[in-house]
Length: 248
Image 1 (spheres, rainbow, N blue to C red):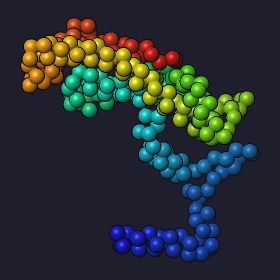
Image 2 (tube, rainbow, N blue to C red):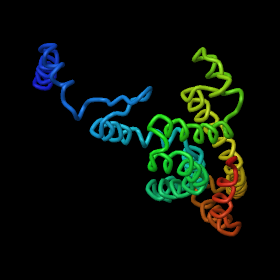
Image 3 (cartoon, rainbow, N blue to C red):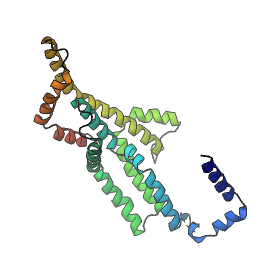
Image 4 (cartoon, rainbow, N blue to C red):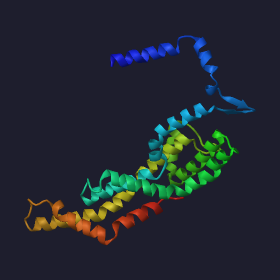
C-alpha cells in the first residue's frame, strides 16, 4: 500500500512539474483538437481513448437503459418460486435475459443505426450530432416504460424542469426508468409467484392433516410445481409475456 501511494505521488509530481511540460504536451499533433468553423473535431487518438473509456461503463448502461433489468429480476423470482434457487444457473438466466433483451431492443438498435451510426460513418453527422440522435432514440424507449410519478420525483430531486425541446435530462430519465422497471418487475414477479404459493399451501395443509409434520412440504411440492410449470408451457408464456410487456 505504501509503495502504491509513493508511485501515485511521483506521478502527480511529474504531471505538475512545470507549465513548460504542459505546453510541450499540447504541441503533440496526436492530442490536438482540430476546429473547423464552429465545430470541434478531436484527433483519432483521443477518440480511441474515449471509446475505450466508454466500454468500461457498458455493463452499467446495459442494466440501466435497456430491458435487461426487468427480465433478469422476473427470471430470478421465477426460479425462487419454483423452489430451486440454483437451477437454472446464473449463467443460463443471464444468457437468456440478454437474448430476450436483444429481441426487445432490436427496433431501437435499427433506428439508431439508421439515423445516427450510418450518417456518422458517411460523414454527414459529427460525433456530437450522432450521439444526440442515438440518445433521443434511447430516451424515447425509456420514457415509454417510465411512470410519470417517477419522472416527477427525480425531477424534483435534481431540481430540474423538462425542456421544451429536449424534455427531461438524460440522468433524470435513467433514474426514473430503472425505478419504474424495478416496480414493474416485482409486480410481474408477484403474479408469477401466486400459483406456486398456492401449491405450497395445499401440500402443507395435506401434510398437516396427515400428521406428517417432520416431512418438509418443499420436498413434496417441488415435483408438482415442476409438473404444473411444464404442462402450462411456463417458459414459453414467461418469455412471450415479458417481451410483449415493453412498449416499443
